[in-house]
Image (cartoon, rainbow, N blue to C red):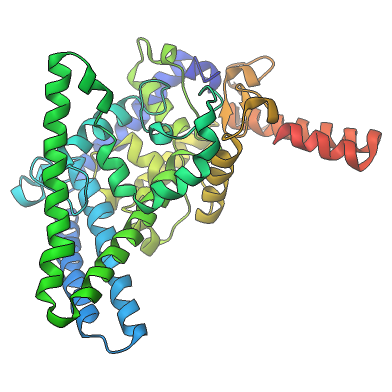
Length: 428
């Protein structure tokens, strides 16, 4: 089953976790003191650049006389929509720029260019997801309510089609997250539940009407004879934006190493344990400045979950300090190339679509699912007398992988190629 004691899993004592909390709180305090003119200039320039790019892309779409020109316009519009959603809408809605006290870029006033209602998204994302990150039964972002991404989720026949559901969710991602906070089953609940859900549906309907009128009625009508081109281009740009947002979000939450937690783990949870759960429950992907910007700096998902309301342009420098903290406490810092992180995610989605009897590994010890019971005798970290370095979770995981490889080689030597393949499969 999922992790029931994050401290035991991390091989840390209560004193270690409190020291970790002090160091991570220190990073927050340093960034809060340092933010100022440079950060304000960054977000204002991002807003201006995004709007200029969108206008230019729409002009190219209408005026293009060749297919390459039209495709360039569609790509530019998709990029502009991605920037608006990821680096602006997502981060503004987290309150990252509230300290500037500017109404235009305040979390209470920003309404982003997508089907999801900002207020509804802030409820299930800012509160439920970020507070209860990867806690089974409490964080609805685990599989987004339609997919199985952990052995702890009981298999049901509907999961057989989850590879197809995954593709459809990617294409229509804005619609999926738009419906995510609306629990239609509550229409059969108490009068209060029905009233709340009906209010959500009305707000969602108004947002859908606004988006459909803008992208598929108003802007095409302003394009004159080329209205069909504009309509198709808007639809294509929205799909591009959906695919990119899906890719970034999934690579931050479902690769190997992004652990899941049992509700018992958060009973009487301390601030340090909350920090630790964020570090172990999320994953980064490697990115340079351009890719980081295009992802809304969510290539630093670990840092974002530690400090969701700090300016996103600070995550790169924060990441250096968080890595140093992970090194100090011998904790894993889960990251890798974007393609690798997505392939690991896709493997989990496809693999867990079938019943457990066809799978290797267990709910305590599989690449996508682990708990403190994956270790035969979980221990707290120790300091090596030879190197002076701490030996904790990262070393324990490395030793576990090494022992499996040795066991696999031993099985291969004893039983030939077939036995070796079987041993490898049991660890996959």
